[in-house]
Length: 173
Image 1 (cartoon, helix red, strand yellow):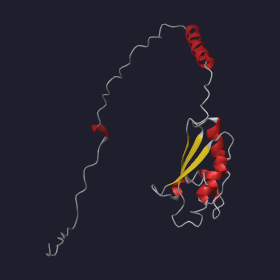
Image 2 (cartoon, rainbow, N blue to C red):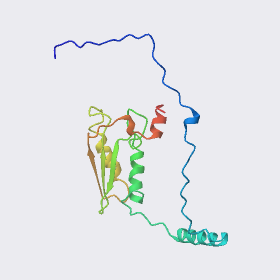
Image 3 (cartoon, rainbow, N blue to C red):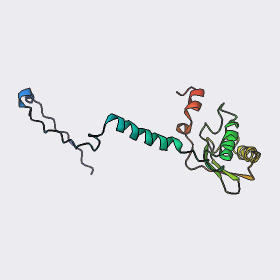
Image 4 (cartoon, helix red, strand yellow):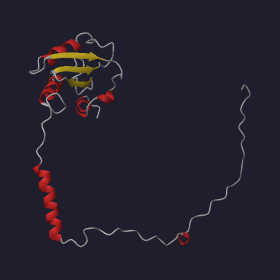
């Protein structure tokens, strides 16, 4: 292991160029593509149009289902997210949701809101006050019975967690 490695150097005057490919060497024979017969080949254009109309009628007849209030897209969930978007980091002019500090929002069947979040750094000056403020704000959303904020440090926050709007606001795009 203590031996010095030696690099061997070979000096040459010239190197042969590799032969170039010629067009004549290329094979002209291409296998014929395999085409399966269409089951609708014998079908007239009018029949195809009627078949498509039937498909669209069935598709358009379906009514969208309402998302439960506590799931993403539900009214209560969206109200909690809107509240989180109204809370701004005191040092950065971007709301905490778009900043990527909110890792998750969960609404229990009893309409309790559980927010999992982080801060930009453990030494953030608002580390003691921000979770309490978020808990108060989320708890004041109509329909929320109780709010709980879980402050986590894993995974750590990084600027890649920010939304495109936040990056644009901060001049990072």
